Image 1 (cartoon, rainbow, N blue to C red):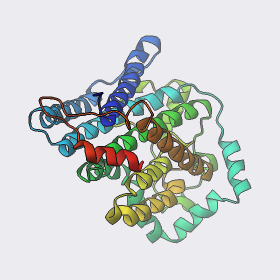
Image 2: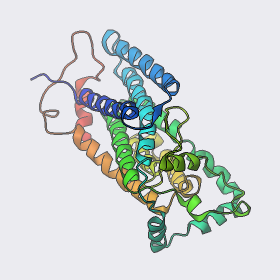
Image 3: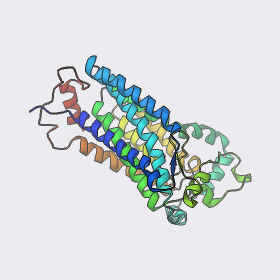
Length: 327
């Protein structure tokens, strides 16, 4: 029996999730006081459209499955980032009671002292100078990961990587609506004197504005990261480690880089240790779920699939089937 390949099924699922989020974001002004800042969506929409168009060329007319995957999956990453950020704004507007006191109590139960870590960073500014750019490297890392997986021929793992990131982000946004937190920095309210060596986030006016109703603008470019619990940075770091682990020459560099990102997250991301641990746990769970979806017993392993008559954006079936068996 001939059927579509698992990568095609996963692409369809990923685009469906992106479309569902976009629908929620763009319909929300009809049901609330939010407004959409349309120009901020223009660049992501144009970039995604161009990438998809070129991907289709390398899928059907000049088949190159790795290049086609790199282009289309980069478009998916851009498109989801554009609609995921405003979705987090809608979640913050739920204005449920802040849970900072509970998260701080959990940290203390773990023996973690956020203020002591801040003091350590201030006493060793070189450490913070090294960790800060690593913390800010997430977007670049995620884009490079798409290229590494695509051109490394791990086309199914590439889709699992993107699907796990999307699932993790959506769950984190949902949790942030139910258990909102301002973050460690405003909770501890460090003075200017003892925070001179760290960079203070600008996201809190937006966060508090979303909660009190004074900020009601949905945007793609320029959106602030406003989620505290769980930490999306921590989750993304874990997803990168798992996704790129099979690439031997990248393995230890990615592990080291993202362990450093996790170390930077409490201070640079204004996160509690609880945020970081919850983000890591969710990432592992969602990567497992995404892998399970990719290897569902719906025929991926037992049915045969083959290129269409005009070519295919799939790798040769023996290689793709071998990748399925390794998962």
